[in-house]
Amino acid sequence: MTKDKQLFGTFGVRRIANSILTPEFASMLAASYGTVFQGKIAIGGDTRTTTPMIKHAIISGLLSSGCDVVDLGILPTPAVQYAVKKYYDGGIIVTASHNPPEYNGIKFVDEDGIGIKEEDELAIEKLYFDENPLRASWEAIGNLYHNEMIIDEYIDEALEKVDIQAIKDAKLKVVLDCGSGAGCPTAPYIVQRLGCEIITLNCQVDGFFPGRNPEPVKDNLKDLIATVKELNADIGIAHDGDADRTICIDEKGNFVLGDKTFTLVEKQMLKENKGGLIVTTVATSSAIYDIAEEFGGKVIATAVGDLLVARELKEKKGLFGGEENGGLIFPEFVYGRDAALTVAKILEIIAKEKKPLSQLIDELPVYYSEKKKCECSDDKKTEVMDNIAKEVATLGYEIDTTDGVKIFKDDGWVIIRPSGTEPIFRSMAESDSQDKATELANWGKSLIEKYK
Image (tube, rainbow, N blue to C red; front, side, top):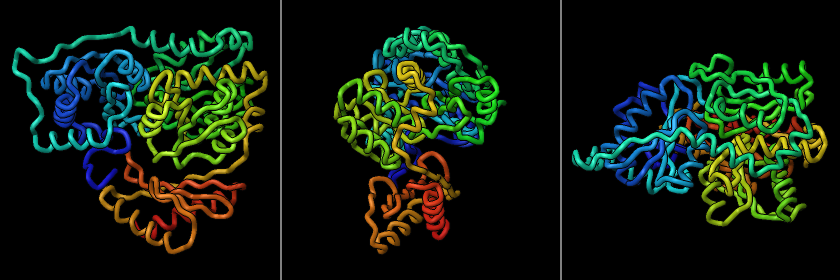
């Protein structure tokens, strides 16, 4: 979050629902967005209990600004982005992604389905705080429509981009955990149509997320890991709350880090296309660069945020992109992290290579990573970051300040940055051994704690 922005984080606005994120807040913010993005606006949301309340407030705000609104229902964030890219003038997604159930959020996208630019966020905030959005006269108020067929189209087009028959022939056994989130109306049907034997966990829509927390980290996926091992499945697949991220469990029950699946799919995309431009963030593994060099690719790194990666992919006509958290971007399909095509592509790789996932991962460049986090109030983030940057600048290491500060040491790197969606700092490190990665991450965490 910059010094200028008061509401927007890395992608949209995320707060505790019905506390700060009230219907009045949502309606005014939506009217402000509608003032900047006039036209036909799509809206969809995840499964949270507060999503209907916030969504209806947003619809009212958009209609009052003269926008027509198309309600897409409950569906993944990338499905809304897909719909906007093909048919609409903008879009709003009601979701708090991986945050706990008491949170909700509002993601705004432009006509390409990409998260809006910072200048648009600032314009929307000005309209919001001045209480001066456009209010259409009674005869110019927008109309409300519904499109319940977009999910089927989204699934169909994702499946068109892989070799369905090859996956069917492999007869894979898949354990799927949607976390009761927005992947429930899409992911089971995708896996089923690919001819896999499917076992589902938490694939019932439930905004209380009774089975597990929406964030697909290892500690939250113990049931998935146990089920994969117990049933001798070929793969376990987990999504976050809005189904734009995918985390895999290999056939041995090992948790596969998101940057490993990113590297695996990058390798396949570069082989199929005989090279291409890869876009990622400064927080992603060095393995991305190694694979690009081996298979004729070029890598561009942005600040953290999938909307920044997506925008760079569009502007530079990139082949593929993503982040280290399991969010992969296929720009030909959606200008944003997309779980549907990610799942289909990973199953296709396993099927065509005729190798188990663990072996495919073992064949990738080996790096070890560690992540730590510290609580830090939003109002102190800038001060803490400034102090850390000043101290690091005196140490003589090579640094990268694209996002936070990334410090390169002889045995690896560590990046320290404030979260754009939560009141925390993150310290992420990578090295050639787990002990070194942990040591680097702890060192980064100690710098945060020194100044917070």
